[in-house]
Length: 224
Image (tube, rainbow, N blue to C red; front, top):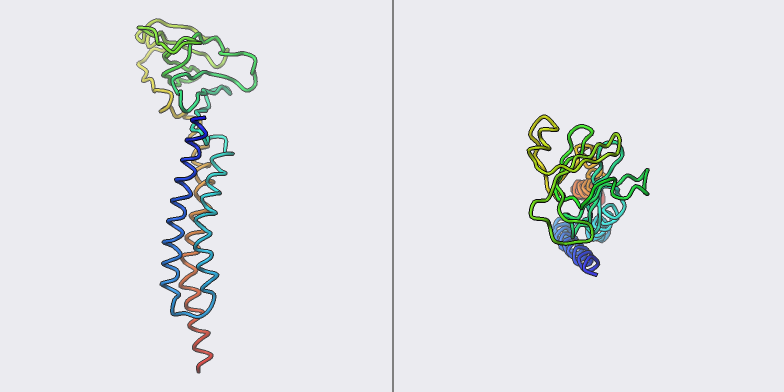
C-alpha cells in the first residue's frame, strides 16, 4: 500500500514538473511568435505536448529498463550471474540470488545482508538481520561468498575476513552499493531514458528561429 502511495506521489510530482515546463515553454514560444504569421498554434501545441510526452516516456523507461524500478527496489549484478536484491523500503534485508538457479534459495547465506563489497569473484559483507526477524544481533557476523562455486563461509569478525582476502576491504550499505559490472549498463540506460527527450526539446527550440525566418521571408515576398 505504501509503495503504491509513494509511486502515485512520485508520478504526480513528475507530471507537475512536466506541466510547469510545458507552460514555460509554451509561453516563450508565444512570445517569440506573437507578431508572426504562420503555424503559431502548431508550435505552441508542440511546446505543451513535448514535456508531457517526455515525462510519460521517462516513466515507461523506469518501469521497463532492467536497471530501473518504479518502487526504488535494488537489483545489482554480481560476478558469475548472481544478483543482490532488496526492496527499496527495506534495503538492509538484502539477499543474493541467481536467476539461473532459482531453487538455491539464499545460496548458503545464513542471514539477510546489510553491507557488501565485490572483490574479484568474491562477494563479501556483513549480515544485518536473522531470517524471519527484525532485530539485529549485538555483533552481526560477516560472510564470504564465492560466486564461482556458490559456496559461502560465515566469518565472525572483519579482521578475519580481511585476513582471508589478504587486504583491507571497505563495505558499503546495500542502498548505496553500485556494482562495477553495472556501470556500462547504467550509462546506456541513462542515455535511453533522458537522451530522446533532451534531443527532441533541443530540436524544437532550434526550430523556432527557423520557422520565424521562413515566415519573415514568406511575408516579405508577398509584400514586395
